[in-house]
Amino acid sequence: MSKENASPFNKGSFKLERCTALTDGVFAIVVTLLVLGIDVPADHNFTVDGFYKFLERISYEILVYTISFWLAATYWLQHAAIMHYYREGNRALIWLNLLFLFPVTLLPFVTQLRGTYRYEELITVLFGVLQIMIGLALIAIWNYSKSNPQLLIRPIDDAFRRKVILRMLVSPIIISLIAIALSFVSLHASALCFLSIPLHYLSHRQIDQNWIESSPRED
Image (cartoon, rainbow, N blue to C red; front, side, top):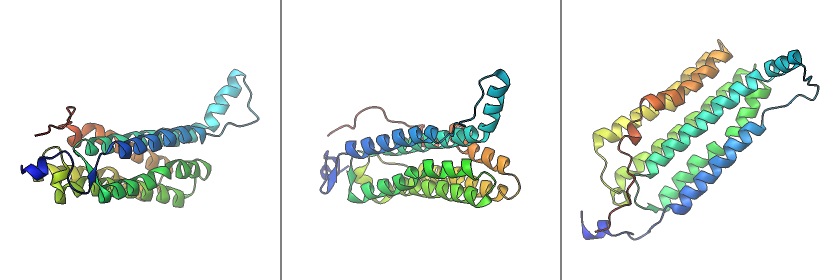
């Protein structure tokens, strides 16, 4: 590594603390808004029978909330793992991060739409498109390091880079496309298909298998 590339901050680069702090704050607000979107019926009855009926009435909303919560958690984990490979950032990387946060902030809105218009396939299509947008933004942030290796803590092997991109193409992009197609057959099956996105991440965690906990070494 050259002396220029090994310096803590290259020309036009800056620390990523504010970028990651903004991202963490956005996700904290998003997951809070998700649970606030669950509607509580005004005509509830707190007998045992009334309680079960109440749960039955909001069961689909809880399912949608559960799916969106774990999707948001998965995207936060993916983003955190990606940013852990970066030593520093630049203007383009920050804009890519904002491009990623834009669809993330729409998750509570689209989730509430799914709970309200549960029988509308178009809403499921919109939900799936949102997941695809988030997935593409994550791929862009990850792949940006290929042309800017000086921003990294250490080099990323090309085979490993392609493996991670392929995994992110499957989850959430391809899975979301399958869920969209399923929505025209069964909305519940489509919802469960979206839930397989975080499950796939947990079973194929290539991106964080080399998670770097130590601070970047300064030569």
